[in-house]
Amino acid sequence: MRILREYEFTIMKHFELYRLSHFQLILHFCAWVIMGFASCKDSSEKIQVLQYQIDSLKQQLAETYKPGFGEFMNSLQQHHEKLWYAGQNENWKLAAFELQELQEVASDIEKYQTQRAESKLITMIKPALDSLDQSVQEANKTKFINQYHFLTNSCNRCHQTTQFEFNVVKIPETNKFSNQDFRKYQR
Ligand code: HEC
Image 1 (tube, helix red, strand yellow):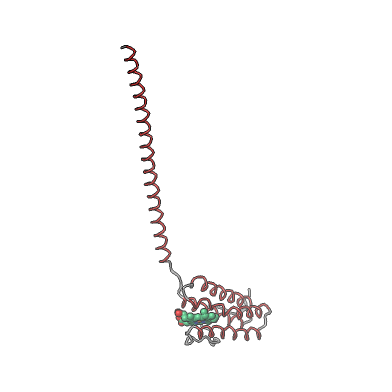
Image 2 (cartoon, rainbow, N blue to C red):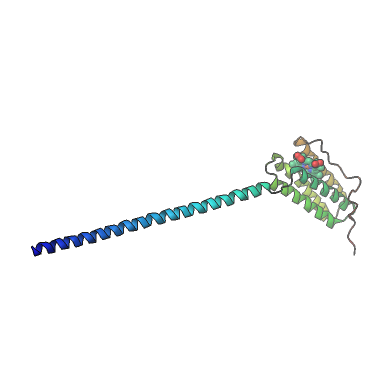
């Protein structure tokens, strides 16, 4: 009888142990599931925050001021005119500067006006800008005048190609920049 009781006791003990380890296993599993959930929730929150940041950046980008095609053209028009008076005064440093500005505006059109198909045609003025640059480096006024005509014709050729032929560019007649001295800079 005693032996039987002892045996029973051992079985119970085993059972207890078994129950305990089973219980621990379940506990571990639960903890694992909860942690999983928590980290899932955590990363989904992070994704939401990132999405919000992306959306607000997109919004800011869409609202950023970008000059229109016409504004870039007005800028080309100004530098085109200033270049003429610089050349007329044989102020080659200023002429080189104005050429650089024209080049920059052309690059900006290519960069910022990609939605307009015409932007690709801006390269039409590049050969004229290059030969003008040559004449400026040689300080050759006759060549400069010839190449200036070439540039002006290139401007108009693009206006014709893009159905803006009514925008006619010509050789400047009166200098409207009365607040700028086009003569060579002298100390
Ligand atoms: C891509 C070809 C192209 C080239 C090259 C080009 N233009 Fe234009 N230009 C245009 C287009 C297109 C318009 C119409 C802009 C618009 O839609 O607002 C325009 C408009 C203009 C206008 C009218 C702007 C206004 O609002 O009154 C002027 C001035 C002008 N261009 C000057 C020039 C000068 C100067 C050059 C050369 C140094 C030149 N353009 C070269 C395409 C060109």
